[in-house]
Image (cartoon, rainbow, N blue to C red):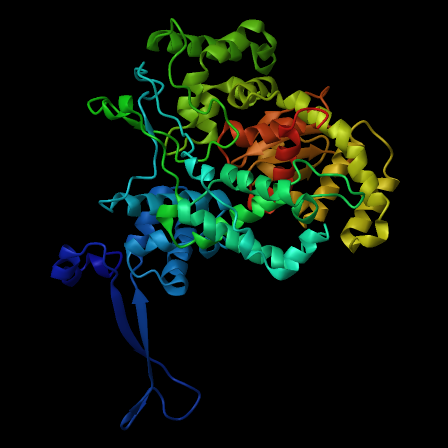
Length: 547
């Protein structure tokens, strides 16, 4: 016997048979003695403690099903925290758990996997709700690949924008005065106006997406650019001019929808062809719904002249080439062609649900774990040559960022000032300015360096790093050197393993492009601890050179 559930009383209990998801409450008592002459019992007085234990086995099973890698102690800690601190009383309550409830016990990716599964199961249990997962017709890589078109995520129609009117009449008096004087909007009145605008938007659309918020922000910016626009201290327009207002509107939308799962989750469009394929084998794609920035997230049909057998044959050819030639064989022209022709096959595995481990993807498609193969896939996925775009971005912006901080040294906090002194004392190298710009940006956003970079000894190898370091789950750029500013060799790690070794002749921009490409190629969300810096890189890299 291991616990009380192995006993006949528990096994024969009718309630547990009728309600297997119920939580057992076990009461027991224990007498104890204190340092006094009474003992544990004296005449009519007796000292004892009564304990209550909640049986969290059902909760543990739900967690273990999604995160089988958790050890027993961590599993019990998470289940106990959910029951005793968060207040989960039955398995249905798990759908109400938030990331903040688990962030002290699990990695961010584990939290998101768990919560996504909880909410998906709750959604499937509602008759009128559509499941969260998207479905499409191709089947697994080692099975036959259906030639029927698949359904990728498509943003919902925004026809409501054509009839939407910005509620100018609800502008606060202080904001009206600032607009008439062409002055910057005061923070308080600006927030109030954003709330009013979002309230008007939600009358037509319960959950406007980021693009919708951008269109509304653009209208406001066009009418009162100096009041709502993004401008530097020198008066230069930053980016589109309304990015901060767009984000402010979207943040407000997400805030008011925080308790409304139906309005937060976006559902994919379903075409007629998909509805007619009821008899076909349907495979659920990766649970990621947001394909923002991707123009080819999941191809709808196979390349001309290709069949299931031909794609599998080409995948095997790629495996043989990699086996004999190693990562350097990626330079062969036929490897590029084969990877391009099997792109639909690669996306099918990456987008599958539950999402595959990075190690499983590496076994199937090893060329994705070379810098060239990753960046080529990124270009097909987004239409952007990330290597050249980030390189041009760093060349054009890094000096400007560093100079901006250096000219206002006394304005910054102690951490920024210390970094500026370190930058000044570090000898110049080809990568110093670019690395300095990223580190200063992280300091500005109050993000820790180790949320994006890991510093290791210059002589470290892939095997020694994996053995000696506890690598995080989310992507990191491993910097080899005495300090971050002087590093000249780089690697990328994902899910606790070194996945990409950047060639020694390449620079920091190439290493950063490999790190950034991993988020898009492998459907990985930005880690919250470095999200501001990563989003800044995304915005800078998504613009055409010279803008």
